[in-house]
Amino acid sequence: MSLPKRYITTKNYHVVPILGLHPDDIKKSTKQVFRDREDIAHCTLLNLVASSFGISGGFAGYKEEYQHKLAPFMEKHGLQQWSNLITPQFTPDANAPLSLDVEKLADRFFFF
Image 1 (tube, helix red, strand yellow):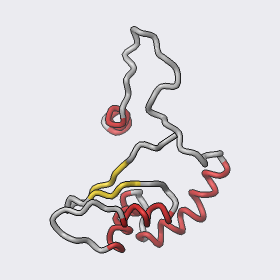
Image 2 (image 1 turned 120 degrees about the horizontal axis):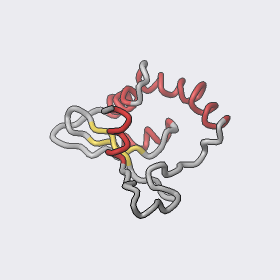
Image 3 (image 1 turned 90 degrees about the vertical axis):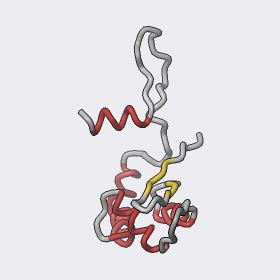
Image 4 (image 1 turned 30 degrees about the horizontal axis):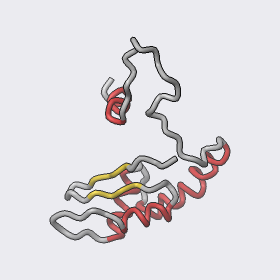
């Protein structure tokens, strides 16, 4: 199954594709950044991605969190493969208004 691409944008219109959660995936993501208007340092992008994930301490803090908390949690709960949680697994009733996309799902979580 191919993972749909997700992106993080910065204030200066740089777009970082998110390839995965492993620190090596984050490094690859920041090397594939779409630059607009001005250049931005690789280290700055790493820290921006880490802070957008809610991690304090920059990318070094993210590596610590990943190694000590996130990776063990994912392994314990069998979260080693990406799963599409947006597309329904079963065909809904024809009368049921069920068509979710990423934006609608985010709206349900954050704009209630």
